[in-house]
Amino acid sequence: MVAGAQAAWAQESKMVLFKVVTVKDEIIIGLSADELKALGGADASAVAHALAQKGDMTVWQYNVHRGQNGELQQAPTAKIGLLANSSLRVEPYTTPYTILPHQ
Image (cartoon, rainbow, N blue to C red):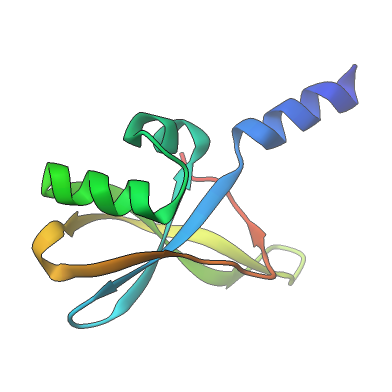
């Protein structure tokens, strides 16, 4: 029963990372399954389409940090605003590190 609850929590809290390429730089953002569902899809094109349609989005920026045990993790660092006119593309992003969910 506990293992099932943990698996359900892991599925609910699973984060999907995307690289957003702008005129000035590249940033990594993380979206939860619920956030992706609200956007109408779970891939980079859904995120790009939602950004273009809305004109702006508030998301969590992710960066690599060391966890308490010293292992590297991909963790949320700041809630940021994205503007459609400065974003050139959105693409999937993979990482070998554990991805921490945001609040």
